[in-house]
Picture (cartoon, rainbow, N blue to C red):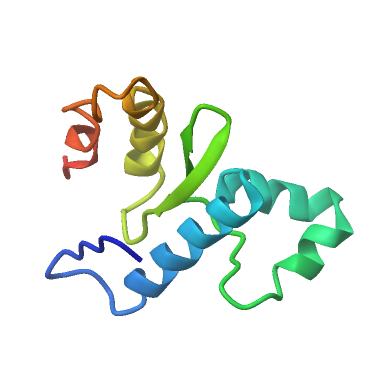
Length: 113
């Protein structure tokens, strides 16, 4: 883990939940939401969900540079899907692969309403 942020009023489970979402996204090179959907139709995904650190809950995104997955981001503790959905387009705006650095608005959409 490189960076972890936690709000003062976040539940005690949110850090571990976010870490597992990021791990799942990085390991399987897909969002944890996609992993969760595939658990419904692919028995092997249900089996993989029993591995330590893997979780099938939306909120994990793979970090990509070009075609390579170099890490994962996990969000937990947001009330509902609104902020998780906001992260999806923000992650696609990242300019990391062009070596210009991340988009300054990358985390702006994650601020609470």
